[in-house]
Amino acid sequence: MRLFYDPNIAPNTSSHQLSEEESKHIVRVLRSQVGDTIGILDGKGHLYTCEIADAHPKRCLLNIVNADFETQSESEIHIAVAPTKQMERIEWFVEKAVEIGATKFTLLDCKNGERARIKTDRLIKKAISAMKQSQRRYLPEIVELTSFQDFLKAHPFGLLAHCYKEEKKDFSEVFQSKDCPILIGPEGDFSESEVQQALEQGYIAVTLGTNRLRTETAALYACMQAKLLIGT
Amino acid sequence: MRLFYDPNIAPNTSSHQLSEEESKHIVRVLRSQVGDTIGILDGKGHLYTCEIADAHPKRCLLNIVNADFETQSESEIHIAVAPTKQMERIEWFVEKAVEIGATKFTLLDCKNGERARIKTDRLIKKAISAMKQSQRRYLPEIVELTSFQDFLKAHPFGLLAHCYKEEKKDFSEVFQSKDCPILIGPEGDFSESEVQQALEQGYIAVTLGTNRLRTETAALYACMQAKLLIGT
Image (cartoon, rainbow over the protein chains, first blue to last red):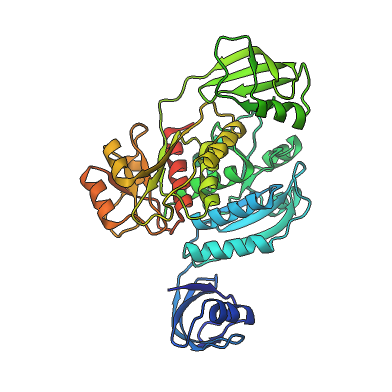
């Protein structure tokens, strides 16, 4: 069954009208017809099995045949990462991390960061398609660029993956599946004062192994390790 | 120190002349000058620290100041994967897997595969730049497209990640760091007969978790799990 995303579909209704954009996509592009069955994810736990009632190219109408709800896992994988200079690298990371099971992303504005601004709409598009691809029920939140200091204020604890020669814990020893964001720095690494601030606040410095990894690789590696620790 | 790759640099020599292409790159593009220090990786364990003796745009001459050799780890991470339809996805996988620590790649020609042929030269380029990026000493081998049957003949044992509803082992329970290739199928999965052949030969079916992963994501996830089991 082909899956689509529509956050506006209301629970406990028997029918739903798709947006003009989705209607055009489903009717004009995919040539779907009356009677065809499609699935709609709302990104909030529901999978709606729907039948096309009116294949209108602008106001496609669906009959909701079945609504299945999945409660969200309590485990969190929150990756806070400094966006890479090349947009495609951070887009790629978001796609893969959603497939693996990341639940939240924050874009970190660091001293050595390579981007002063970044549009999240393209990242959200990547997240949506990855959610459909991996048949996940919840669309991870993507938080706009946030200064390192504001992030520390908002999150009392977390893990920090920096590259300075200081004592670090093994990721698997200290990761927690709740309220434990994983911070990944820019190519130029976190500044010494950023590392200091985080450690003084109680953040734990972790190592992701000896290889020197690109920002997006380190972020995905951390995400995969977290997923393995949480279990399927 | 900026790193370059040249497999032809001979051990136990005091000087080396770069290829015309590398000479042009270093002298014309990067504007390197006599006396500048650069590093040359040969992909076979050596890191040569060199000083530019003659910044000739076609025959750049280097004095080898120091030669450092690192023996290769005995642990292997051999990923045999069906190439994806989109070249960029498999290129991306190779780049990331080299950063993480994969030691060998084989491109698998499967019944449900999406590519009848694939050029490895672009993949090798990706592997070289990832080797430099992650400062690895050994360039992983990339084996040309190989039929599933020929691969089984050449490799008596391995792990098979398929999506059929059959009993599977947890990857971490059965992975071995030697002579244990990890086989990742195409988007359409391995055929039932391919799975049967492998299992009859003693291959072990493994699960990579419950999420439905794209081919390149599954391949990298397996690579990262292997790396975690081997340790840094």
